[in-house]
Image (cartoon, rainbow, N blue to C red):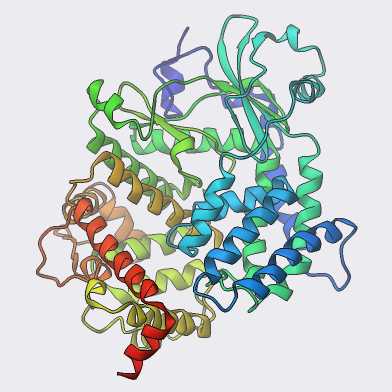
Length: 538
């Protein structure tokens, strides 16, 4: 073990580790920023719709996706199970089509609150159904990346992976000097297949517009562009290792020591291989284990919220794929982050747009929030914000959804979606990743702190930002500094359908409200379409 005091100055790492992170002494970092730009410049060509089918791969793709859509149209399109039906058939088609489509399914499975619940539930099955590559294949890739035999670098490496995903799989290993590490290995030829599949997706996407009921605001062409942005950087592990260093530095600069990032190896990082520090801890859902070890699970939740939001809003960088498999909790209570293939990076303009969202939400300023969404690219630059507020009814008192009939909720959602589409709304990558992470943290509260008062917690986090970053935030947004900046939770309460005078809401109570809405929908579905028609006639 090595003294790493200097190492902790530049990154949120463990207190002790087998090597010191010195970015200047890491040869794999050469040209890493240029490589990132090269990936971004390749995107327009990869996602450009073509007049003619792009290669033979399109035949296989059309056979599986076309077959799924055809069977759905014949059997389920006009039934109450149309969303569940198309979701299931698309998931089965994705599994047949391989890693790129499985990865797309995994991205969709983390989109609770963005994509339909049935689609999300169905694609969650893709998370643990990816077969690992046989060991001889893994060994060949590693030796190609190293340029030498494995036994010259590793004293041992486990043949059975810890985890296998669509792009890569992870193995425990020990270096020749006795250091315990984790080795991430890319599947062979996956980069070529991803590029091939993206061209096919871009060709097919325009034909799917208006034909499947799961597109919502992320219409198929926009979804392909967003997915291409997400997956292409994952194909070069040197970019992922740099993401690890950048996120770790962001936390260190913020004084945020509640997170820990594993150190990438100084030398053993290539395009298809990433050797990193091995960390151990509690799985995120192991509440009993954490509490038995004296871990404050409430503090874990707050660390997750504050650390994630500070990284995004102050430094413009954040882990883009939070879920239970990508983090665990150390016995110290610190949260270890894993898998930095998907990382949100905000331009200065978009970071300021997110700040507008934060300030607008804290002060219940709907116009500022919409301006933030516009500047993020969710709305066109020339959008009439006052008209949006009027059309969406954002200037009216909230309606409690638990008191509404399911038909009324559906009609209201359809009206809102139609209005947003009419304004040209879309889901930019950064916003999707941000919302997706917030949804995960929402679920983390249910697991780790179900009796947490959500309003009190939001107020505490808002005050943290006001006290620690308020002067900077106000200065960057060109607003007058207010030392008495107090959060106004009226808008937050309205988003739950609650009146401003409601004082508290625990997550357990929120879950009960959501369950009531689901039960109302289930009761209506059980009544059948005939009963619904009779009720409408009355």
